[in-house]
Image 1 (cartoon, rainbow, N blue to C red):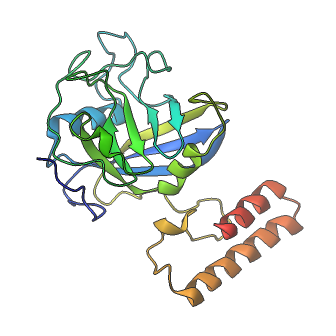
Image 2: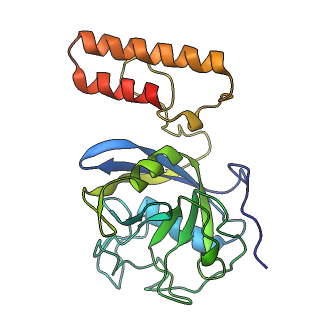
Image 3: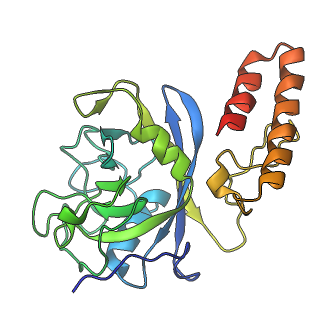
Length: 251
C-alpha cells in the first residue's frame, strides 16, 4: 500500500541532499535543493546521488560520464512535471543507471500526492535508468507505476520557472540545463542566498525564506530593502541587476 508523501522538508535529517544549479537560455535562474529518501528507497536514492556527484566515472552502456552536469530538462508539461536525466542523448531516449542500463522498481511506498516530488521516469515495469521528473501538481495516476524517491526542499520557485518556459510540443524552446550539481554535506551552505555583493540577504524566492509569509510587516520591510537595492543598480545604470532585484520584489 502506498503512503502519503512527507509534509516535513526534509522528512529525515539523515537523508542525503543534492542540488541542481539551473540555467535557461544560458542565464542562471537559481538552485533546486532535493532530499533523497534513502530511508525508504536506498538503491534509487544512491543512484541519483551518485549521478549528481559524477563519482562513478564512465557508463559502460552509454560511454558517457555518469553525471547530470550539463544534462537538459528535455521534456516539460505545464501543470504536470519537468523531466530530465538523459545525459547521453539529451532527448529522452538515453541515459543509464549506476548499476547498469536499467534497474528494478524498488518500491512504491510514497504516493505522487503533491508538487515537488522527485520520481523515476521509466518505459514500463523495472526500467529505471537515470531519467527523473519533478511533479508540479499531484499526479495520482502515476502511483504504483513510478518510484517516488525524493522531494524539493528549496527552490520550488526555480522548478516553477522551468514549468512555465515556452515549449514546442513538450520540448523547451530555450535550453534548460543542469549547469552544476552535487551533494550537500552536513554544514554545507545550501547556496540559496545571493552572492552578488549587493547586500541582498534574501533568498530569490519567498517560499525559501525562513519567515512567516503572513507577516505583512516583515514582507514590506524585505520588499522595501530589495527595491532600494534595485534603485542603487538603476542609478548606476546596471540595468540587468536592477531588473533582477525589481523582479524579485514582485515575487
